[in-house]
Length: 207
Image 1 (cartoon, one colour):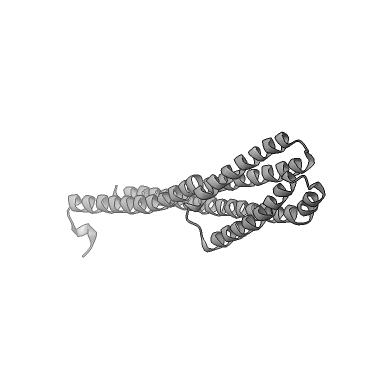
Image 2 (image 1 turned 90 degrees about the vertical axis):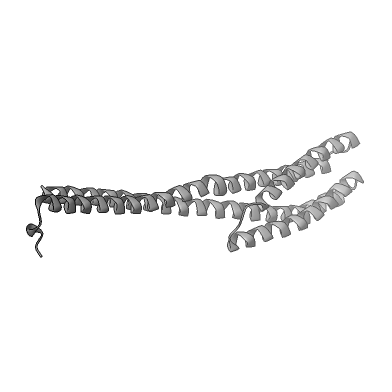
């Protein structure tokens, strides 16, 4: 049966209904894409960026420990050595707090591997750093310097490298999610543009 056989009111209702359905369908698809955009942007701000911040804080703490250790080896006055050690303990406390906070965030399999590497490097480096500190307190400067340069220094650098790897990993994840969000936004925009053009065409045909 041809559409022209129906009354004008029926034909107008049909045309109007088609436009409404198309509008609802396009709006639904666009909202789905925009929800994906929101999810990715929210994940970037509340997850990736926070992880990067925490890793940077830990890296800074490791740097402070490394610098303070060298100073302790060079000092000879007991009070000065203790003052430097207080800075070291504060840096370690800050590191532990940031590490505990990072552990509360979920991690991908690749992220878990990096975190395991960080934990192992930290355990090795801290044991050697404590050895340097004990030698510094005992005024065994030559031994302390030897351990610092040959063992503690390289171990601390591996620790720092593991933290840097995690920072780069999170930054790469941010770039990927930003790309996905941009693609979803463009797709939603084109859905709305095409739907609007089709609606205009249907309105012309209905007229």
